[in-house]
Every structure is written in structure tokens, then in C-alpha cells.
Length: 565
Image (cartoon, rainbow, N blue to C red):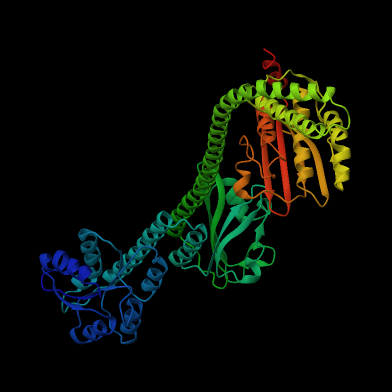
């Protein structure tokens, strides 16, 4: 071993240091280093080293180019190729160009030493001057072949564990199957669970004509027999004979092995010789069976990956959905707390104002009764009466808002209640040139509800819609049942509400109307009524396009019954 010359070709200083300081020097090898492919090739010609260790990707001249150049120069120098994971296709090409071994980076010192021993085995057997015997040459050739086979299996195994792209893995397995068996062509077929047929999943050398739409019936094909029995089939012919793979496709020899997942055959890995009748061997059966096992692992891994991916996406969707629900619940809680605190304040203010306003109204009405029709005081007193009555209505709204009365539920037909509500506002809406459209679900079930409170909500929303369409428009009323909900939808084509104001429309005293045109309590009261019915009210709006209110009430009658207590 001592004194054998090694040429190291690698542009990376840390890789060179690892090989020279940890592998070569401690084990008695002498060495020369080249930092690019051109320099390394020239040194190989000049110094004729016993072994070359080169990286696959070297500047100016790659590892594969170095192998090709050495071959063209007739130099039989053992070469070990180093590469990262995922370069197995290059490894196959390297072996075909005469590389002795293939080492995956990062590597262990012992792995490199073992590869070097294998690469130098022939040279050590010959000695410096001796010539190998025929038996030694045969053994050496078998050894080389076996090393190549094992390296191919090793590289494919790495592909299976490092790649998630099933297409790439299966194509590499078919390429490896063709190489290790010396076949002219190869294919990997899977069982279609719907039709029971075999369909082509990956191939090499079949030709586009046969690869496109390649399917085999299990009952009438050699590959189908492999699926049925779970056993390999090895067949060959004499020179003039042929074997039928499928109608119109004949070969001279073939080898098919099953792909087994647990006790189920899920496909077939096959190699054929179409031109030459060279038979396949038992060793080919073992090699192809090992590759079939890799293919099965890759397919199962891909299925598990897809299933895990689906689970992950579903979990992410549920987390997002739950987050939205929690955010909505938090917003509702804040809204309820805000309404409660403002409600207490409103109740106190309303009680304080109600009594003096009653006195003012009483005196104004009393004086009006005693004054003649032409008295000049009648006009200001009439104004006092009118404004006092408006104040009383505002106070009553405050009290309604502050003290939500519990609903008194009765079995209620929502479609009929909407019609009654429309009749009450129909005249007012028609004056504004607003057209009303109804789209009721005729099979809408009745629910337990307080019809007077719901009518108050319906009228309030319709009047808001009417006021939002001063130049006319349309108001669509829709009823429907969705799952466990009954929905009432009011969609207008009015001026719309800005995104900032949409967040505040259920706040007490919030209004976009002119002073004196609204109290800002209508929607707050409506919100409280719907919540008291165990429902929800949502709003969507776009400026200049219109607004849609959606009321959601539970169809479960027990919810209404519980609120009677």
C-alpha cells in the first residue's frame, strides 16, 4: 500500500484537506493535488498516478470529461468519482466511461479507504511487472461488474430516500434496471385500481409510439401473470422466435418482476431484449427484484407524502377557520359589552329627561286647547308639542335599547311576516321610486320567534335601504334555509357604506344621517333583538354599489323554547 501515488482533483480546499490529511497521509499514500480539471488531466498524463480521486464538478474540465479524455488517450488509470446526492445519473455515465467507484459527499474516511482498496485491487494483484492469469482476469471482471451493480443499487437507494418527486425516482429505477441487466429497454407499470389494467408509469427505450397509451390487460399478458402470481417471469427464445408483450409488440427475451406493497402486487418492473435474443440470468432476477423493492418504497413514500400534505392543508384550513370564529366571537363579546355599558348610561339619561319632557308636553297641549285658532301663540306652541313628542320617541328608543325585553316566541312564518312588514313601508318606498323584489323560499320552515320584535328589525332595515336610495333603485328580499340556519337577506342598490363605517353601524348613536334625521339607535336595537333570538346579523357594503344585510336565525325550535323561561 505504502508509496502508491494518488492524484486528487478538487477545487474546494476543505475537501482536499480532508482527503490528504485524513485519508492519504495517515495511510502511507503519496499524493499530488490539482485544483481544476485541465491541470488534473495534464498531471495524470505526466505523472501516471496509481489512482485518481476527482470531484464530479471541477472547473475547466468536469470529472466525466476527465474520464472521456483518459479513455481517448488509452490510459487505464483507476478513477474514483466524488459527487453530492442527486447525481446518480452522472454516476451511471461514469461507470460506463470506466470509473472504478463512486463516493457520495460528505463521506466517512472509512468509506473512502474501502473505495480506494476496491479501485486498486487489480493493480495490487498484478504487481509492478507481473501479468494477470486468465482466471484472475475473469474474477477481476466479475468483481468490477459486481461493484458496479452494487454501486448502482446504492445510488438508486439514495435517490429513493432523498427525492420526493416520484417521476424522477421511477425513471432512475428503470434506467438502472436497463443498465444492470444489460437490457435494450425497460418499463415500470402500475395496476389501475379502477380498471384492473396495467398502465405505463416510466420507461426507457420503448419509443414514443408504444409508450403513449401503453396499457395491458391482466388476463391476457405476461406482466398480468406476474400480478396474479406475485412471482417473477423469465423467458427467452431462439433466434427466429419472439415473445408477445402486447399486440403488435414482440421481443426476443424478457424479465418481469412484481412490485409488492405488503401482500399486494401494485405493479411490474420489466426489461426486454427486442433485437438480440440474449437471455436474462438468475442474477438479473435478484438485481431487478431489488430495484422493484426500491420502486415500491418510492411509491408508498410518495402516497404517504401526499396524504400528509392533504392532512396538513386540512389542519391549516381548520386552524384558520377556528381563528376566524374566535375573532368573530371576540368582536361580538366586545360589541355586547359596549352595548351593555352604553345601555346603562342611556337608561339613566332617558329617565332623567322623560319626566321634564312630559311636563313640557302637558303644558303645551293644555295651553293649545284654550287658545283661539287665530292666536299668534299657537304656532310656537304647536312646534313645542311636535318637538316634545319627538323627544319622547327618542327617549322611548333609549329605553328600548337599554332594556331589551326578552322575546315572546311564537311559531312564526317569516315569509308572511316579511309581507306584512313590506305593506307598512310600501307607500313610503314607492314615493322614492324604489322597486321591491321578493325571492322567498316557498318551503321555508316556520320558527319560534317574537314576530313584533322581528317586524321592528325588518322595517328598520328596509327604511334604511330606502333612505340610501334617494334617486331610486331596487331592494331584493330573499329567504332561504342553509343547514341549521334560516336566513333573511336585504340587498339594496343604494349609496353604500364606507369600510370604516361598516365596523361601527351597530354602535349606539352612530349615524351618517344629518342632525335631526336619525337617532343612531335603530340598528343597535335590531342587533340586540337578533342576538336575543340566538341569531346573528351581518352586513356587506361597497361604496356606490349598495348594501346587503343578512339575518341568520336558528332553525332549532328548542332555542326559541328556552327563551320563554
